[in-house]
Length: 412
Ligand SMILES: *[C@@H]1O[C@H](CO)[C@@H](O)[C@H](O)[C@H]1NC(C)=O
Ligand SMILES: *[C@@H]1O[C@H](CO)[C@@H](O)[C@H](O)[C@H]1NC(C)=O
Ligand SMILES: *[C@@H]1O[C@H](CO)[C@@H](O)[C@H](O)[C@H]1NC(C)=O
Ligand SMILES: *[C@@H]1O[C@H](CO)[C@@H](O)[C@H](O)[C@H]1NC(C)=O
Image (cartoon, rainbow, N blue to C red; front, top):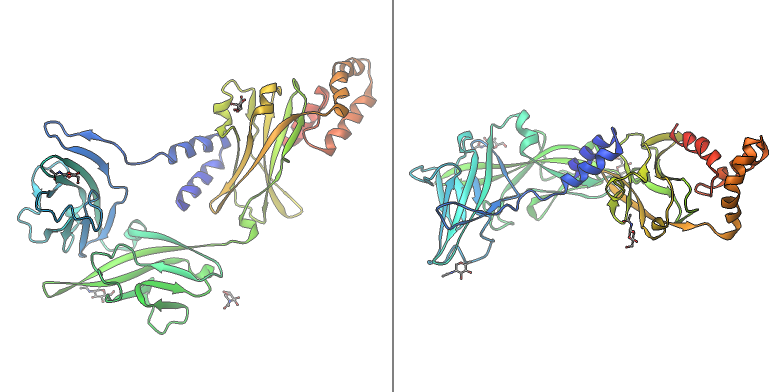
C-alpha cells in the first residue's frame, strides 16, 4: 500500500487528472478469473494473490491455496490433491527426491533457481474439481535480490516497533519451540540487546523507541532440520519508519461546508490544503462530485478541476486545486462535492455543498448586466467595489468583470 501511494503520488506531480485514472486502475482486484480447462471438468479459481519469493538453497513450503489451514478436506480419503507445474502435464514431485507432498503442501528442500515457476494444485473428489495456481520465484542470495525477497513492515517514530518473521508456520509449528536469529543488515542482534528485544515468541522482535535510524533491511533466520541436515530458512524484512508529526498529515482548510453561489454565474472554489513543512510534492489533491471523479461526472466539462498549485506562505506549504463551475446550475445545489487530499500516510476529505446566495447578495445578480453597461460608459467605481468584496471571501457572487482577475491570480 505504501509503495502504491508513493507511485500514485509520483504520477500526481505531473497532472492531477492522471492521478484520478491511476487510482482507479490500481484498486482493481488482481485475481478472480474463472475459467474451465478445456477437455477437463475442472474449474480454475485463479492465481493465489500471494507469491513466494525465496532464496536458493533454502527449504520452501508451497501451500495449496484451495485448502484452508485446519480444514480436513486434504486428509479425507475421498479426495485427491495433486500438483503440477504450469505448461506441463507431468505431476510433481515425479521422481525428484527434493520434492514431496504432505497434507496440502508441496515441499521443496532445498530450492534451486530452476524450481521457479507457476505451480497448479488440483483438488478432486467424486463430484468436484477445482484448481488454483501459486507462483514461486527462487533467487540467489545476493544484495541485488534483497529488495525482491523482502517483506515490507512499518513502524512509527518514538513508538515501540514490532518486526514479525513471516511465513514460518510450516517450519516452526510450535512458536515457542523454534530457534530464530535476528540480524540488522549482517549484524547479529543478540539476546542482551537493549534496543531490539525478544518477547517470548522468537518470531517477533520489539524495537524500543523507534527512530529514523532503524530504517533498513533486517533478516530473521530459523533453522529447519530434515534427514539429519540443517537448513536455514531466511525471511528478509525492509523496515520503514513513518513520522506522525502533524506536518505529514495534510489538512484541508478551505472550502467551508457551504459555498454561496448564484445560478448562471461562473464560480471558482479552491480546495486549499495545508502541508506544514512538508515540501515534497507527495500530496495529491482532487475533487469529487457524488463520489465520482469530476471528469467522469461532467464529461462535457461544465465543471472542471483547475491546475495543481503548490506554494509557500510564511514558511508553511500549501496546495490548491480549484473546482470551476462554468456556469453554476440548479443541479449543483443537490450534488455532494468533496475535496480529497492524500499522501502516503493519510487521506483527508471535506464535503461541501453549493447554496444559492441569500437575498442580501441577490441585488448583485440583478446588477450584473447593468454593471457591464456602467463599465461600458466608464463606471470604474463599481469595478473597484466588487473587487474588494471578492477579496474578502472566496465564492461570493462575482460579476463577470471580476472573474478574470480572480481566477488568474489563483492560477499564478
Ligand atoms: C467434494 O468436495 C466438495 C468441496 O469440498 C464438497 O462440497 C463435496 O461434498 C465433496 N463431494 C464428495 C462426493 O465428497
Ligand atoms: C527516543 O529517541 C530519541 C532520539 O532517538 C530521544 O531523543 C528520546 O529521548 C528517546 N526516548 C526515550 C524514552 O528513550
Ligand atoms: C545459516 O546461516 C548462518 C548465518 O546466518 C551461517 O553461519 C550458516 O552457515 C548457515 N547454514 C547453512 C546450512 O547454510
Ligand atoms: C448527485 O446526486 C444528486 C441526488 O442524488 C442528484 O440530484 C445530482 O444530479 C447528482 N449530481 C451529479 C453530478 O451526478
